[in-house]
Image (tube, rainbow, N blue to C red):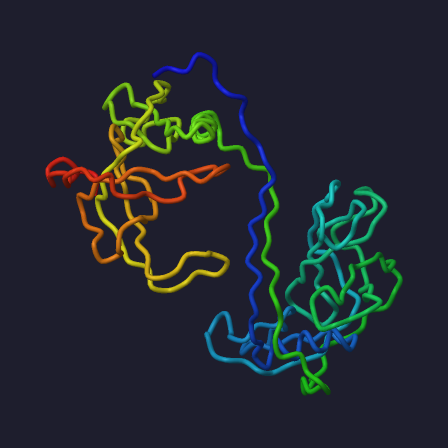
Length: 321
């Protein structure tokens, strides 16, 4: 079928996050604990360079290194970029500069934020100092930001050996990996999602090879041409291959074991994923004919169940495995 008028493109906020807990080795533990205590630590490599932030292995020799040193809390901007539109959870809520700062006594630079009134106030080579956070917990955010120090302010001097020993050392952190963005599925998948709202599965046919893609991609990945001819496929289909799931997933209210399968809907040129229900898990097989089961208000089929038809012949679906 060919749609008379395309649906309005969908757009929605999307958050991808993966907070995870990691343990710290002696070098990173000392570095973060030092920040909590108002001390910046680096590490000395085999060729005598002082690296801040410290690393656990020499970047040249790959040997483990433990020689900690204390560096200054003032330093020099080596390069910078202005951030006129800070995003949520960035170091400052007002416009600021991202800077690489080589702290006094260090040979490498530390990336952080510089609180400045505007880009005209930032220059490569300017002197800056650490502004400590009011409450420090043992994280890079214990440095709230850097601030201008003035060219006349004396340097903190050379790096000095440090034992790295502190009371109540930080031994682990939770890394908050998160990405917030606005997502649009595009023309083809917008039509696909709109079809699901009517309990229909809409694919698109390549005008060159005539393969029907479900879900549609907007272009044929084989021929490289746009796909604009919309085709309703299914609703029934054939199990091409499957797996038995024996581990219960968090927040998924499905008893194990259950079967997750590739299902080639009638008229489609490739298989999509779906759960198989309405049949004992050990009776699911390749070639099994299935149909979708929708729940009230569901945005997609809850699962697929056997239609009662004879199994499909292998030659019918072998190219879709």
